[in-house]
Image 1 (cartoon, one colour):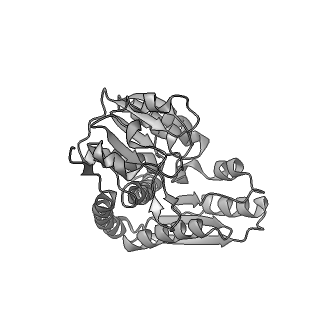
Image 2 (cartoon, helix red, strand yellow):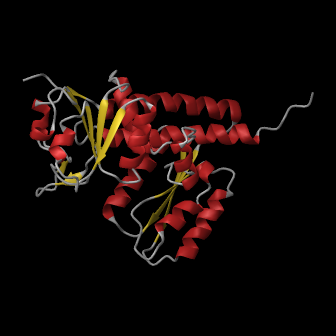
Image 3 (cartoon, one colour):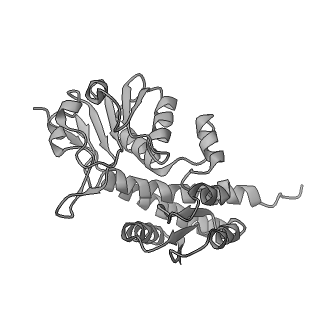
Length: 292
């Protein structure tokens, strides 16, 4: 049995946050600008509230301004769109995030499309999705970007490797596949309804799993020595957080992300990093030209 390398997203995320904290302090001193993240939270979903609070806590820790604006389940689409419009035009707001999921009476696509794509820190606006497809991105979806950053940190090569992405969501699976292609991996996309899934996942040098099903991937899905990235966040019968991949896969894999402590912290780190980048872009666009 080989020794598995745990891809410690929590430790790397802490390094990224420490570096960002220094950059934010310098930005404040030199430009008088503090990056500001606005999170719009609708309803009383417990998980969404926890995610939003975690983002706010991390943002404040590194010196950002952070606002969580909460709305009841009964908020109308017009009311939510009006607040998005307000923050689109607020000069001190650099990044806007609508916490998903939204109540069923709200049109998710219209809400996300209403965000100014220059402030779309999640990378979900059609303009940013299109730029990603054209290999001209300014904003990346945070979870796939966090995964690539983690793989790079551990010097895991992507060029020429076979990468299998299990999951086809617009948040993780689809952008992940595109970003891997841009890094010269050979990409196969699969999902929970793929026939002969084991035959496909066993080809993977790098297996990325984001299906939202507890312990969906078992050791017999995995090629000896593969790198396995588990994006899943599920609760077991005891309320414990578990992934989409069975822990026993560690006996097969050469490297694997833990749950918790793998992909989740990296997603938040990328959110913060992109908020900082959007603040820099805002400064660049609004600098007053010097007189010659």
